[in-house]
Image (tube, rainbow, N blue to C red; front, side, top):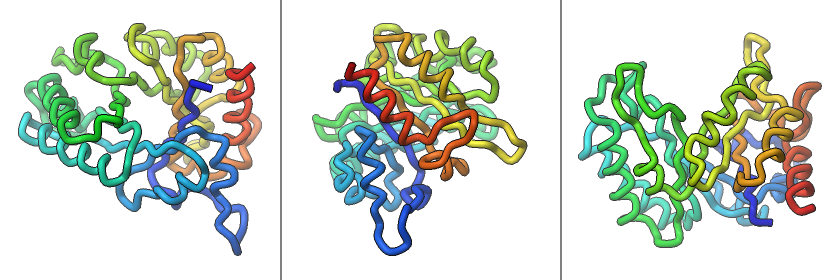
Length: 254
């Protein structure tokens, strides 16, 4: 199967244990093809034991070209240390210079500098994915990315969350397929329920959308912000994540 089933976590501490005596998390993690984690306490041994590919991500924050270059160098070198196959550049407000961050004059140029420095510092086998704001410009018109810049990445993984089905479906095409020539791996929610009772993700809808677009190269689930029970339990609106991954694996292998 060429399509990736990526689990993105903040920390391995989020992953539920099925036994108090033995750490057997690798058993259920083996349903995924890759685990993406932050470099702090990088769980390389657990990822290897699950038979998954080592991937990583970081929330980028830089306000000028010098800081962007330093960040690209730093994370490229960490990819060497941890033998990372794909690094996901999470380019949100810390790159665009929007609330809660201070204004940034040229976020596009900064991101260019980041990519250039990363490519120089990272192993040649490490691919680079864009995982950030899908809109091309800030509300005041500053350019964030375009076709030329996204071509410098290996993957496009825009975030398509949402707490209601109509908005998720409405934005699916414009967010996930903004750059149709890119290698597309959408990032979706896992059905976590927030403190207000909102559900972030609906598996029947996401599954239908993913399977309707054969050009997608996989899926990237963001497992964080209190999603712990969604791994093995789930609820009426979203199946357990291990079941979702298995369903896609079977459908894409059929």
